[in-house]
Image (cartoon, rainbow, N blue to C red; front, side):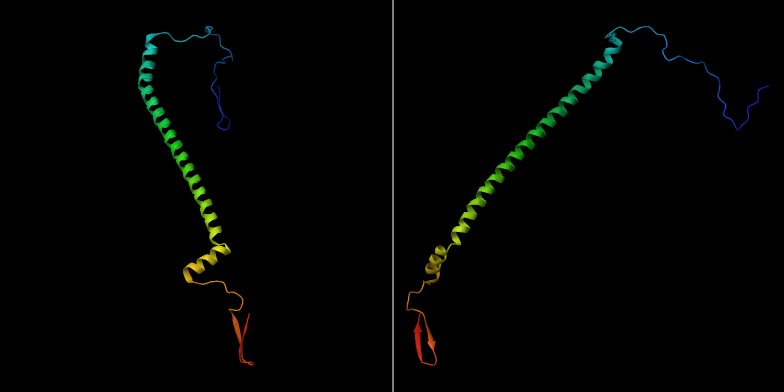
Length: 131
């Protein structure tokens, strides 16, 4: 009588199979050639091929549009850089001393004084001292 205690695991005996089982050797580059195999493969290809082509067309269209938008943004950036250079040159020209004098004379009728036009009043002596 065989008695197995519950404290020890029990495994049923199995037939030991070797690592390399003997089988018929396969031929090199052997592909299935039966119509029963290739018919479902052909059906799957007929269904997947248009889907893959549609996805390819969409991706290529998206890449083209993205490239066009990048080129347009780059062109706009260069236009803005040129405009910025022009505005900085205008700002530097307008901030010059000659431009201030010209605008003051033209718009406000203000001119630079000449010698003897500006004077200060001396209260003690009671007359003007011209600079």
